[in-house]
Length: 303
Image (cartoon, rainbow, N blue to C red; front, side, top):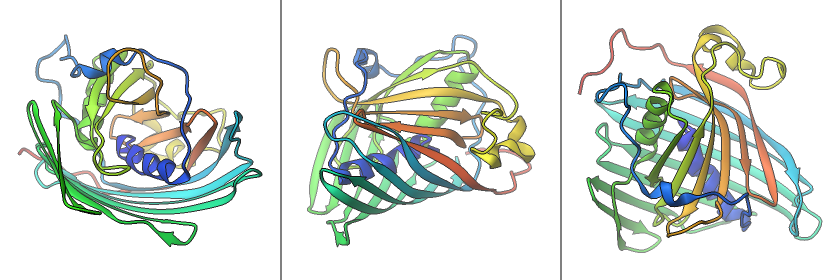
């Protein structure tokens, strides 16, 4: 969620925009989200995080619904294909199909396809998203972004040529994922960062605030063995992981309400399980039904 994980966030957020819902999750204090992630007090050079190359499939279902725009049912699937390393950069292809049923507004079917590339040093980012809503294609969102310290620039090609600047530092999804793992390893309980993933209209930088729980080793959600089965088996069953609550905010000052909140189990290799996306009026669960892990390299890439 890496969207996740963080990359998964990009696909889910874009999907939510297509549904036309506005979140009203519990208020938080986002002031910290405007500050860069702190350095680990234990080491100024933390151990590198190696993100696993993998393909994951999540089946979606309705977790809860309420408020003035309740959803009666939700179903769908997310497929994520993540490849790369710190030398070659990181490529992620995502497809998300979601069907929401509401007595008030009827059914809405969203088919989203997203492709991103992030340079190994996280200075450059390319993104393209194509969405079909109820059978009608929306204009593609296609562009690039550059992050160099306090300078951040977005260049859109579609739906129209446009250039947007923002104050940095801003993290791209794979770097954000690696920073989250580093913070979790170091025993940090919170991490804030500005994040850009190319979602929605391709112009938004989000303030994020992560709450990180205690480290666990062994199958996550062991009691709920019917969920996330691939994480209970093989090598993944012993990978350290942490429960994370990640809130996304529009940029601004003072106390704000999250656009949405994503909870998940963050595994040390960047794989995510126990997904739950809360938009306030409704929440969606993601159950991992398949995980294909590529063979890990004999030694880490040294850029």
